[in-house]
Length: 186
Ligand SMILES: Cc1cc2nc3c(=O)[nH]c(=O)nc-3n(C[C@H](O)[C@H](O)[C@H](O)COP(=O)(O)O)c2cc1C
Image 1 (tube, rainbow, N blue to C red):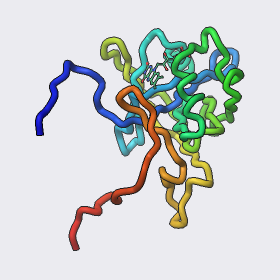
Image 2: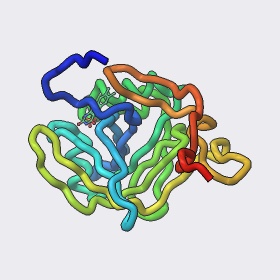
Image 3: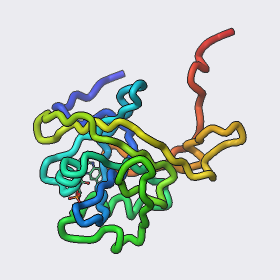
């Protein structure tokens, strides 16, 4: 296979087009789209998000010490994009899109009702990398829409119809091709 070489770029995809949410000091919710996000540790359960210091959300997370991570589905792809192209400094994105929030039970974070997966995170570490900082969030609670739980009681990404992002585009998931460990021959 012939390989095409490119200069360094963000090429670890697909990723979720997550909505990272936080309250401001007046208790108003804001959120921004973030594709630079990953689970990073099992114990304590921790994820990491790369956020540029110019984002309003960056400021809100620094001040509040917590944030929400919300995984959108295909139904709200357009709203998800909107949260990534305007700033909460200029616009109330929730008012403009009609998306709604509920409060986290563990800490003071806004979580987005219309997203099938919601994750409450406590900021445990912030590391400056370059243009972006890595925000490490310890996961305190996870919420799933009941409709994405399969007959075995497990969350199912296809039932949720989660949105994926990469190469500058949004995608839906097509099908399941295997389960964890399915390569093992008996
Ligand atoms: C698909 C998509 C993915 C994005 N991923 C990130 C990201 O991972 N980190 C980041 O700092 N900005 C990212 N952005 C840009 C921010 O979402 C955007 O600057 C947003 O307007 C910031 O909103 P705020 O000022 O209300 O925080 C992304 C935008 C889009 C559309």
